[in-house]
Image (cartoon, rainbow, N blue to C red):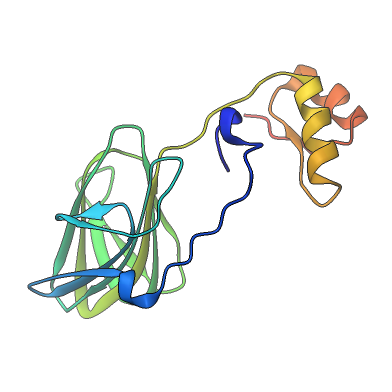
Length: 173
């Protein structure tokens, strides 16, 4: 997804050959930087919106740390092993293969591998919180994206108008 001012830009493709992918190595870990920057190593993918994307491999007991900008969301997807990370209380949470861990606080992210180590994909991005409240915009989105795009209203009072222009439902909190 992109902010409204970038939604209708022309699609672009970035050819990233393997030799342009940068890897940072330090004691107990290897971090492949695809987008964003980690410890001075910058990834080759250029993004329009603030996004970081790393493939992290931790040896047993190794700790990955990264400063997360204010207001950003962090998603970790382990594909091997397990780790712990500080939870919202003083207790640690366990992250393991096949489960998605979502962190919503900014500050210092700390993930410590357990006895097997852990390999995981890490995505960090600034959420796009942008509701227009415009039925005209919803109509244009439906026209451009077609019926396979799920169009939802986030405003109870706009549910019926959104459904009338081809919307699929509502997200209500």
